[in-house]
Length: 395
Image (cartoon, rainbow, N blue to C red):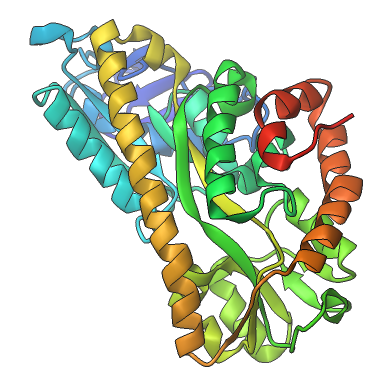
């Protein structure tokens, strides 16, 4: 694979550097690639020129011609039988170790089988590329990845609208959260400025809880705690409960709980069990935080370049992807609480009194703050897609 160097808006093959041969436009799976030092048009964590050059090499490098700058790849390449393009899609999941990665693999297998091998998927994850979830929208919107897993909590600082489906205290239980996610992914498909591209569907994770080193028998017991949270909306509900939200990587939470830096962690029951949080927690508390999830998004120019047959096949495989991920999420939600109990943790279910108080906090604080952050379209998008599942509309 050649090495590349970014200079201005051009990308140079270092093997030809002495001859100063510039690749003004490099064919890739999403059209052409240039590396620009400017901030992307879409809001999202901007990437440095160096990071863009690295990702161009790692993610799209295998699609570049080995000799020189020429290449013939992507949807403009040979069209196979049955109207399918012969193309390899570069997909970036959040993490290989996460539950949804199994669903990504199911998607890749289903799509290859559905198209008789014409459309294949090459999977990697953010960690392998040296990126984090806050950069996901920029990666897919710039065409440096063909498909991307976008977690609302990670991008909500720049794109708050996308977090509407993950507002704590709004959706009761797994089934309601799943239905809300499905409706939300469909509703956001017409808003590429917020998602980075064409939304293929939702990706289920698991319902999330509060792991606590305190005995929690009432919501008032949460006051004064320091709680690891991710996303603006979670921070709002933590503050509403009288606690202090703390931002930190999930991998750091065990040591932080052990040292008393924090008193609680918001994450899934399975995710927490995998981190052995049961060793440093006494209670696992359901405070109606709902299910976390993600969006599967495809670069818009890539999507538009595909044939109708390609798009139909990808859409059908994306449905398999989504259902598989939610099946895994259900098992993780149910099995995670069992694992916590086996570790000696007291599992505290949400009761009707708590649900009422949490719903009031959410509507009075969390939802209003989200709508204010998200701009003039937020209320209409929420009411059209989520009000049925939330049980209320935003006035």
